[in-house]
Image (cartoon, rainbow, N blue to C red; front, side, top):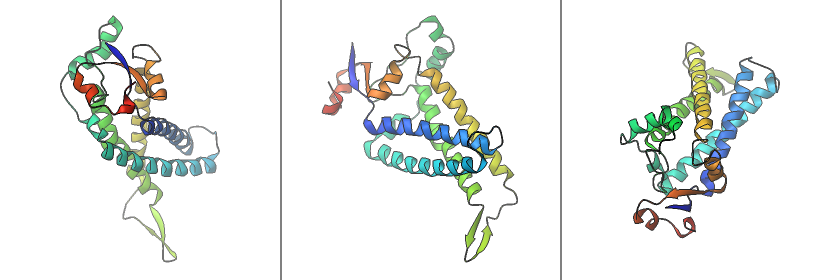
Amino acid sequence: MDKKVYIYRAFERFWHWMQAFLIFMLALTGFEVHGVYKFFGFENAVRYHIISSYAFIVLIIFAIFWHLTTGEWRQYLPTLKNLKAQMNYYIFGIFRNEHHPTKKTVLSKLNPLQKIVYLGLKILVIPIMVFSGLIYLFYRYSQQNKIESLNLDSLEPIALLHTAGAFMLIAFIIAHLYLITTGTTITSNLKAMITGYEDIEQENKSDTDNLKPEQKI
């Protein structure tokens, strides 16, 4: 039986939408800096890119703190259970109106494929983007009234790594935009990330026993 449950907390929703906005701004300004198009103008694009990058780093720090203090980091622990079935569902089953192979609960919001993808995003792609961006930004820095530089022969590998990470993030966003339409209805997943409430199937009593009072209605 489906029950409306408060599954996405306020900070989780704020983090999700702010992260989406900042990634969009970083991509928009980053590709302009690369000369792909003109929109803000080069100098403004550089300025907005730097501001967005600092805001993104601050958001990451708060998100790490939130995940550690709430225990939500456990949501990303990978599992092979139902992984093949989940992949088959996205490739074939979803077009045959088959039932979803995994059921979302408050204690397990992500399916096996999402866990692997999101974990890779958090421990690989985003750190690559952050550190390569910082190296690129602080390759030359002032030190005691003179300009010092990092011990690097060339910035080209760093720039290529940063660009590759950007394309991986864009690929993730495109896939994410598609997958949010695969809920009970086309807009159900989107509404859940706006309101925090989602209709989920209660598999057993333990799922609701561990909920906080504000998560039950």
